[in-house]
Length: 115
Length: 113
Image 1 (cartoon, rainbow over the protein chains, first blue to last red):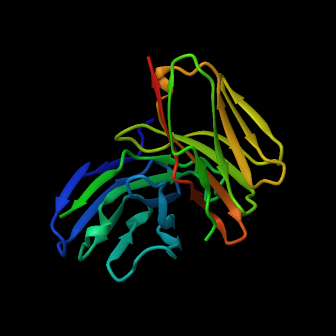
Image 2: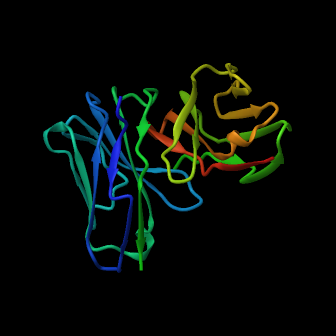
Image 3: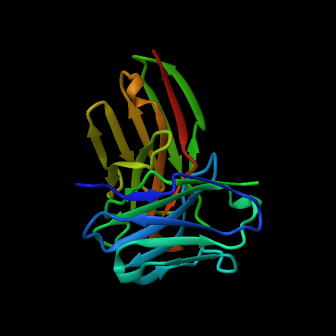
């Protein structure tokens, strides 16, 4: 079974520029998560989708971050404009259920460097 | 904000040695998960524990959930170089964040040949 796919794997931008990340979850998984992992820290949840609806976006900086999951499959995460502190690995995960005890399968992440 | 503190932050040992890493919180969690993350990859789930005092074994790895469901430990017997990685604990179902996982900052383990 194919895993969670993310692209690009690496991105370098200057501050105030825009950037978008793409995620393709495991087929059939209803729940999709975006996490931010800053170097030396654990992943922090940004947003959780159940099918194409938002379940939790309480930690998403909505003034600059946006995310969508069209048709309940692929998802994109956008940052506009980027700040230096947005440098991190952005991880996408999917799960067949929405409980925190359900196994989350993570993609390899996109490493963002903001100069 | 519920915090999960992991210790030690860094651990470097020789192959064949035993080790224990810890995950502690002041909050009670309904469940606790352990993940391993290798460079350039996402975390991979190792185990989920849900009952206070529960002990689970996965080959040379032993996971324990504290009686009060506030802490957990991971013990590795006879470490191998393939055990190298970032070990993350994640708690779910705490009173302040019922639906999401809260991750600790991890223990970076290096097993030397």
